[in-house]
Image (cartoon, rainbow, N blue to C red; front, side):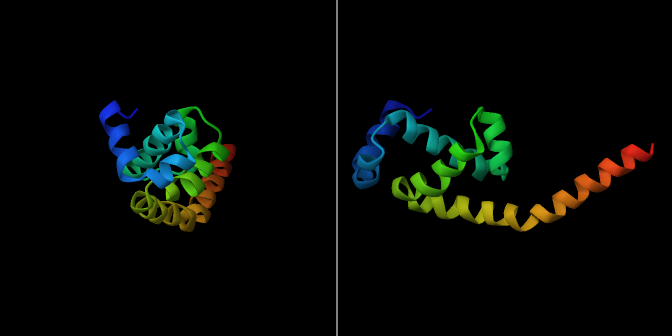
Length: 105
């Protein structure tokens, strides 16, 4: 969670984005999710599992709320999510291969 000093700085630095999402808990959650994705390069699905949220909530926070709150952080996070999206078909193929090899044994 964001500290009170961080929340005050957010309010003063980006008043426009903050006003749209003035619920401090939502703003703090958006930052927490974005920082987690940035640090771990995890997918939306895995991030949702870690935070106990739905994939829809994580997607909404990152794709719609974050650009209004902190566009620079959004751009950094978006690059990671685009990489994950590009690799999705590879991970799916590996999972299928693993599933069928386990069935044979």
